[in-house]
Amino acid sequence: MTLLDRTPSRELREDLWVFPMDYPIKLIGEAHEDLHVAVVEIMVKHFPDFDGTSIKVQPSRTGKYHSLTAQITFVELEQVHALYADLAACPLIKTAL
Image (spheres, rainbow, N blue to C red):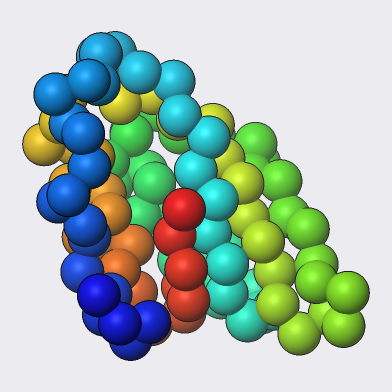
């Protein structure tokens, strides 16, 4: 996989995952208010009860990028793939961990 490949990896050991699963997701993008808005929209799409104010934002040392961290609970594998597909499709998000 190259750095420009934004498709989710399917090479994970999904057979070891146990649902429901609490998961801290971390996203990185250029520092801009639209990044936070886009992330909240995507999260609410997949987790209707998601509270956008719970996202922790950490600016980079230079302030050019923001790291956003949220705690979510996956209930099934398909939810993981659907969320990461939407995150990968968002041009404001550079990396999803």
